[in-house]
Length: 160
Image 1 (spheres, rainbow, N blue to C red):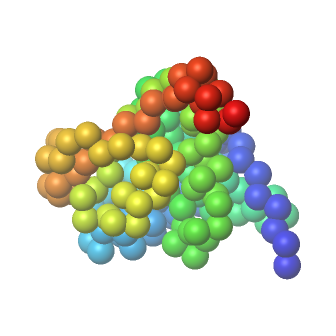
Image 2: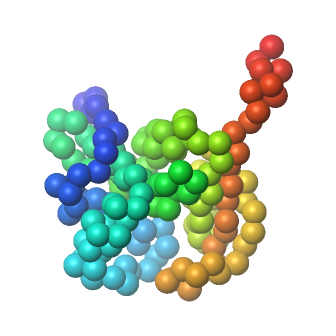
């Protein structure tokens, strides 16, 4: 079965599915249960994150099922979660490429213990800048990663 996946702007009708993907992905990656209640997660998504970030969801078109989500502002990707059953299928790559289309530079944090995520970000041109504990609730060591658009002149030299 060939599923068509579309990336759309987040809408509150996707709240429950988005939170489910977010929580399952994070718990799978970190091996620790989500510390926030569903109600506080709903509040954060719709009242804190949505007003301050652009949120995209990757949706299986026929079933209208959320498979992944990304939240970003003009300089940071603050959230990227793909349902574990749908990882390694290009969904995360499509979301990151969307973020990179109109940015000159992006930063994000990823957890040091999340080796698959670190490899994913490296594959997409993000370079690890500093390792530490940067004020995350989980109390885990994380890594600041940065991506910069190549200057056009350098990119053109390699294309020739």
